[in-house]
Amino acid sequence: MGKLLMTASDDKQPDETESEKPPDEPPTVSPPDEAHEDEQDASESTIKSKLKTIGVAFALGTTGYSASIFWTIPFREVTRLPGLTPTASSQLMMNYIALVLGAITIGLVYFRVSGKGIDYIDIHIPNKRQFAIIIGGTLALLIAFFAIGAGTSFFEGVESSEHSMQQTVSDGNIDPQFILLMIPMSFLVIGPSEEFIFRNLVQKRLYDDFTKKTAILIASIIFAIVHFPTYATGSLGAILVSLGSVFVFSVILGGAYALSGNLLIPAVMHGTYNATIFANWYTALAFGFTFL
Image (cartoon, rainbow, N blue to C red):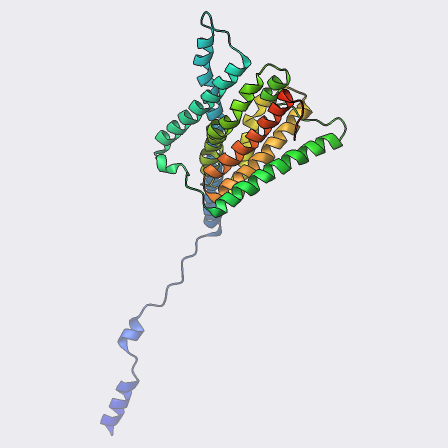
């Protein structure tokens, strides 16, 4: 009997391993102040990154424009040689060549600094969808052109400022035959050069810290600011109307680039729009009528 009681007593004794097991430690929770500081640091880091991206994008846009101005200097020096008389047409041609050289210069500098290569340039053979974007986007540009023109004529006293090139044409300082040359130049020079700078460099750089929609808007603001000197021919109100038009056109071009991911799409749209405007100028000078 005593042996049975002893055995029962032994069975009721707690397991040593269970009694010695330490209690579960509560999860560590950062103090509220430290958590708030971490969130604040992350927020400040994000803001700094966004501001840096905007600064780089703005520098790319303005430097690209400045580079084209820089390249006009040697051409102007050549025209000062004895026996050479610069004309408005030759100066425009110099500006076109300088625009290409400026785009190449800023591209090479950016690639060198950022470590990017030629594959960063988004050039692909357009597919059917992208051809549709070209057609729809070009129509959107022309519709915007007519809408803005109708809006400025509807409100009395509201007008847009003339592009410096348009003013030169209006003054009759350019041979109409040269305007015909400007049509292919739109596709070969103006469209590709400006779209490379403001879409493939500026807008694409903004993708690093912004959504595509926000990047399009910021790039369009930069595009409008850079075009200020070319429209500084009228009153402040007229200049603002013209820059607003440039902003709208840039949003359409930027949207086409974002949808397609192909630089050729906005370049062709830009070239087609400019070529249409130049053709309108030509018919005005050569035949006395316009179709826009």
